[in-house]
Length: 278
Image (cartoon, rainbow, N blue to C red; front, top):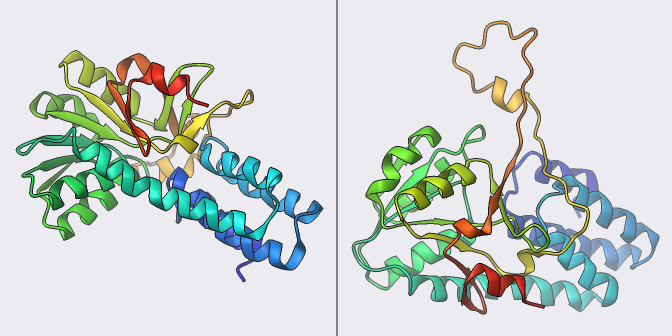
């Protein structure tokens, strides 16, 4: 079994990325951990350490809350199955919004947004994608490569060029790390807010693909800031940066008024409908 330290390292280093993927990776580890150690204090400590590894994403938190009420090994399997099944349903529900001939812009690397794109393509729809690089870790490059392997036409653009190209697309489709109920916000990779503003300026529908375990009712909420070295190492001519402060927030807060629809496993909803869900 992998050590807790190795699992945390994989999550913090973004070797495992995406709110759903982090949750599944953590649940698989905790399942084996609990077989050996039970659901006592050691489980509580391990769960807290894993949740703190990427504190902004909410899926793992919501899964852990369920586990604390249903302390059984089969609960792990139930949650993992629920998350996998949700992605398939999101793909089916979201593909209905995509018409043949659509140009779609996406940001970062979202398994659920990609599932919608792949489903639309598998249904025979002609689509093409604009994918942002997504700095500084270039998660969007992973998206572009994945689409290219499937022979889906994809154009890789810099984050700064999103506003230039958004006028040429039919919709924007992104994932989510959390949908905040109290503040009525979408939480997603930094750069999402600027993309949402640009989409609204050009009257392009802004869609979010997210399973309902991403609905976030936490009172305490933290926007994770990543290490400055992630930005520094991407600079072409960094030179000496003494006296220069670098900040590297991992996520944006996007007011839900900029979102047209949220695609979930339960259907396609307006943001105000999502906020009322229990």
